[in-house]
Length: 485
Image 1 (cartoon, rainbow, N blue to C red):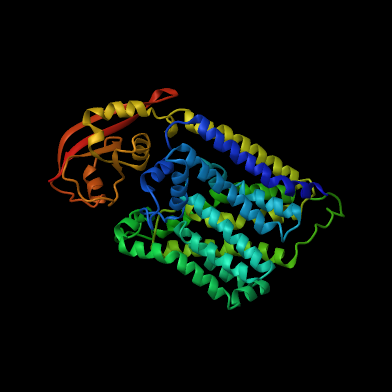
Image 2: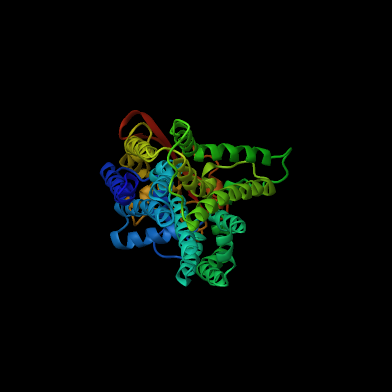
C-alpha cells in the first residue's frame, strides 16, 4: 500500500476528528450567536415551506436539529459541522472511485484551500454551507452516473438537483454549466442524452414544487433580500456593470487564489529534476478523466454565465460568495492536476499545508469569538439591562438578526422578529432595537409590512454595550418605543 493509498484510507476519519474538535470548541467558547446562527433561531420555529428571503433547505435541517436537541448552541453547531464534514465526504465519494489515490486526495484537499469553506463556512455562514453541501452531492451523483449509469444514479441525480435547488439561488449556475460542458465529452454526453434524465428532472421538479408555490404566494417575503443584487435602481450613468465585472474578477482571485497558488507551487516547484522527469503518474480511468474535465470545464462555463448575468442585469456590486459554485467546481481538478504532474512528495506537502491551515483556523475561531469587538463576545446581560426600562418582555421587538436571535435564544417567550413581513401590524407600541443611532427607523416598519406613516416616538434610549474580553470596545445600540397610528 502506497503512502497516498494510506492517506486516502485515513483522510475522512481525520476530517471527522477535525470537525468534532471545531464542534467542541464552539460549545466550550459559548458566548453570543453569530449573525447567521441568530437568523436560524428567529426564522426556524418549525418545518415550513419557506422561512423568508432565503431558500428553505438549511432551515429544514436546522428545524430538525432543534426538534431533537432543543433550541440551543449545541443544535446549531451540530448541524453546521456535520454539513461541513459532508461537503468533504461527498466530494471524496465523487473522486476516489474514479481517480488514483494521490489525485483523489489532492482534489479533496483542494476544497480545504477555499476561504469560504475553511474560514467563512466555519465561522459564520449557513445557507452557503447548504449550497456547498448540495454541490458536493451533485458531484457525487454525476461521478456515479458516469461510472455506472444505473437507474439508481439518475434517481440520486434528481434528488441532488431538487434539494440543491432549495439550498441557495446560485446553485443554478452549476446544472446548466455541467450540461454545456457535457456536450463536449462523449461519455458525459451519452449519459445526458439518456431518456432516464427526464426522470431526474421530474424528481427535481417534484421536490421544488411546494416551496416554489409558497414563494409565488408570498413574493414580498420571499424576495425581501433582492436588494443585495443592486438591481432595479433606475437609470445609472455610464456602464455600471463594468464595476460588477471588476468585482467578479477580484472575487474570483479572493476565493480561488490560495488554491491556485498552492497548485502552481506543487506543479512547478516539485517537478522532477533532470531530463527523465518524474515517474509517469497512474492515469485516471475514462470516467475519472471525464469527471476532471467536466469539473474544470463546468467551472469556466459557470464563471462565464455569471459574468453574463452581471452584464445583463447591470449590477455594479458582486461579492465573492456569489461565486462559490465556481470555486467548488474548480478546486478539485486544479489540485488533482497539479499533483499528477509533480513528484510523489507533493501529496504529503499539500497535506501539511492543509494541516497548518486547519491549525490556524482553530486558533482563529477562538480569537474571532473572544478578541476585541467580536460578535460572540457581546455582553448580553448588559444589553438586556440597557433595554429593561422599555419592558421588552411585553413588546413586539423588531431588530436585526444578530440582536434578535440572541434575545430570542435567551427568552423564547419574547415576541422578537426581524424587519420582514412576518406578522400583522400590532396595535400596541413596538420596540425598535438597532445597532448604531437607529436612523431611518420608519423603514423597518415598512419592511415589516406595516403602515410606514403615522407612527410616533414615545421613548428613546441609547446605550454602550461592552464586550466580555475587551475593556475598550463598545457596541452602541438605540432602543426606540414607537406607537402605531
